[in-house]
Length: 444
Image 1 (cartoon, rainbow, N blue to C red):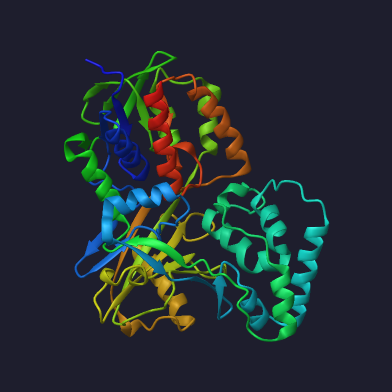
Image 2 (image 1 turned 90 degrees about the horizontal axis):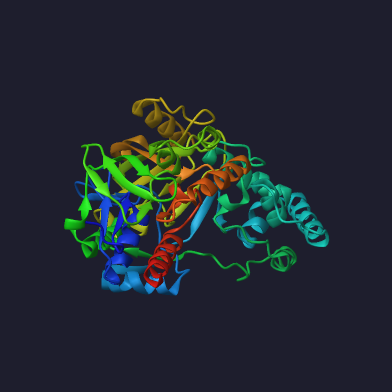
C-alpha cells in the first residue's frame, strides 16, 4: 500500500542522507536504497589503525547559517572551528590560496607584477560580458598571467578538459576579482601589509568529515537505510515513476522518488526506455575518477595547511591535504598522514594504471621536489573514488538541459546532489536544496 508522503531515495551519500534527514524531521517516511555496504558516498571517513582520513579534502564552510546551525545541533561540541589556510605550490614556492597580494609582491619579479597590474586594469576598463567558459572567467577575474600560472593548468589537470571547453560553474564560486588597490599598495610600500584576507576558517568534526553523514544516518534510523541495494530498473508510465527494482529483484512501489546517483544511470534504468535522442545525449555525460594515495609518515607534521594545490602539469596529482590540520584526532601525536588526490584519465595518470604505478609516480615527484623523504614513509594506501566530480563542459550543460527536460515529465521524480543534478555543489548547497525540496513536498 502506497502512502503519498513516502519517499524512496536512491543513494546514501550526502544528498540522499540530507533528504532523508529533513524528511524525518517533518514526519515523512523515507527509505534509502544504497548500492554499497556503507553510507556516506564520496564523503566517508576511513579508519586505518591509528589513522583516519576522508575520501576527499572536505570541509564545512560557514556559507549557510541554517546548515551550520543544524550540523552544530547534530554534532554538538564535536564540530570544531578550524583555521588553516591553503597554499599553491608553484615552481618551488608556496603561494597563499585564495591568491594573496603579498605573495605576488614578494615572490614574483617586477616585470610580472607590472604585467599583472596592466592586465587587471584592462579587464576593469573593458565591458565584460558574462563568461562563457572557465578560461574566460579566470581571465576576467585575474588576468592572463596569474591564470596561466595558477588556474588554467590546474583546472585542466583536475577535469581532464581544455579550460575553454569547461563551463564557468566548475569554479564553485571560488574565484574572486583581484584587489588591485592592495596590489599596488603592497608593491610600492615594499613591505608586507595586512591587505590579504586568507579564507582559512571552516568547521570540521573531530573524528572526520564522515561524522556529519553518520549523524544524519543515525537520525534517519538504520531500519530505513537498505545497504547493498543497487537500483537497476525504474518503471514509469511516461508521467509518473511507478516502481523500482534492485539487484536482488526486490520491487518497491513508488510515491515519490528522489534520485541522487549519477543521472546517466537513471536514464539508462528507465523502463520503458527513453527516446533515442535522449539516450544519445548520455555520451556527453562524464564523471571524473580519482585515486587517493594516503602516505603514513613518521613525522609530527607535514605542513600547517588545510590543502596544498599543485598546478604544474609535470606533477601527477592536484592536491595534498593533511587530516591532522583539520582535527588533531585524525593521527597520532608523533605521526601524521597526507592524502594525495590523483585525477585518472587520458591526460593525466591513465585510468587503468596499477596502484603501484600511481604510487611510484607520486613518490618520484615528492622526492624530486624535496617535499617528502622516502625513509619517513611508514606505509601507504590507495583508494579509488568513482564519479568524484561531474565533468561540466559547455557541451554537457546543453545536453543535461535536454535530459532534464525529458525527466521533468515525471511529476514524482526529484534530482538532488552533484551527480544527479550534474552541478558542482558543496555540502551546504546540498543540504539547503534537500531542505527546500522537503518543504515544497510538505506544502503540496
